Amino acid sequence: MLTFIGLGLYDKQDISEKGLALIRSADHVFLEGYTSRLMGTTKEELEVFYQKPVRLLMRADVEQHPEELLTCAAKENTVFLCAGDPMVSTTHADLRIRAADQGIPTAIVHGASIVSAVCGLSGLQNYRFGKSCSVPFPQAHWSPTSPMDVIIENRSLRLHTLVYLDIQNDRYMTVNEAIVLLEEMARKKQATIPLYVGIARAGSDAPVVRAGTAETLCSMDFGPPLHVLVIPGELHDMERLYLERFAGLC
Figure 1 (tube, rainbow, N blue to C red):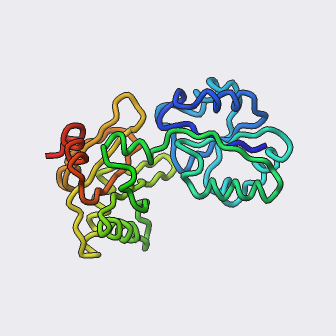
Figure 2: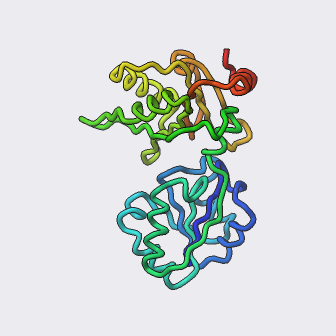
Figure 3: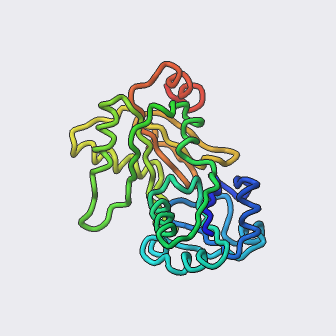
């Protein structure tokens, strides 16, 4: 059996009671550490809390070489843990398909996701979000502008865009870094982004939520990771009021 368990947004206490019980009864526990991370805890703290050893998996372990994971799941009860909700990431959906192709039963225990958390923190209505996108750290001779295509299309439809920020090993993209990259993409595309919403440490006791222009948000310190961005489309009156009350929108 392979059970996908969402751990929630920030720390070890975000997991559901159902998920925790399944982890403690599992024969094998794997933790995915590349799509997102629980910044309010560590792998070692999770092992103490779960009363189980935890094996950390990175992108290549899941996408290219999941043999060990699937072998365990074919023989014994195995859980696959990830921050947020498991099936928000397409790489997890692919893993579930691979397991099913090998005749391995699968199940999902959902967790709180940034997809819904941004709505509560920003007041932007969930049904008004379009396609999401990710901003990667630029590499030598590679600096994609495709995220701006998504943003432009969503804004043309009066929809909001959730923008995931890159994680590379122990490097976490900040709101400030992402805005600089997006503004450069916008210049290349001859586009304008009038408003950003930056969110830091969703799910913690003290998340930071700020709305404003690129200049305004780039002058702010959002503190430790994880960060995420939203590019709003046309605001409903209630959305604007919410951002004014809870995100400092002027």
